[in-house]
Image 1 (cartoon, one colour):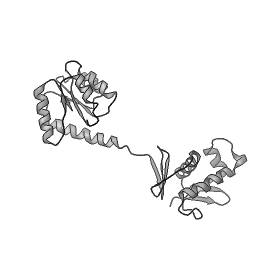
Image 2 (image 1 turned 180 degrees about the vertical axis):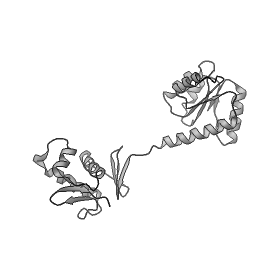
Image 3 (image 1 turned 90 degrees about the horizontal axis):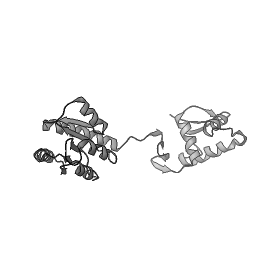
Image 4 (image 1 turned 135 degrees about the horizontal axis):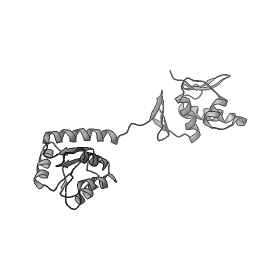
Length: 223
């Protein structure tokens, strides 16, 4: 999206970007910029600072209230303070007129690459063997297949996986996971371990990961 009250400048930018395969929409003032930016297809905005009806800085700030698409500000001013004001209003980059169209294209490509990376944030996933935990969504998987766990079952397997190959007594696990004295009913942990094996192990009777250390407690085996 290109918004500038200089019609010839907009025409030149649009022509050069369309030659590179971009789809371009354009406007001529800040009010138009805010409305055009609501289009979900807009992937990057080139916005002039000095425009009628609403200046580019105000438009940039309003756009930032509902969109995180990259914004490049265009201005005739080159003072560092003006640039800082632009960044404070949500701009990602800043170009001073007149500018080289090749530099503008390079900056567009860089911002689009960065934006594409942000759209698919890396998931916080813990994987050992066939068992995976999406720690953000609190989902569990066995060999890539979703498995339904209760909240406490998830807490138990997450704790064991985070501390793989470390043996914990039943008392230590109850203290760490339940966070209060639950020892009067210590078998509750045994029940959770049994259910976790049924849900996450290929063969619950011969587990590969959720292991018992006889006479001591439990651990998660990581080969």
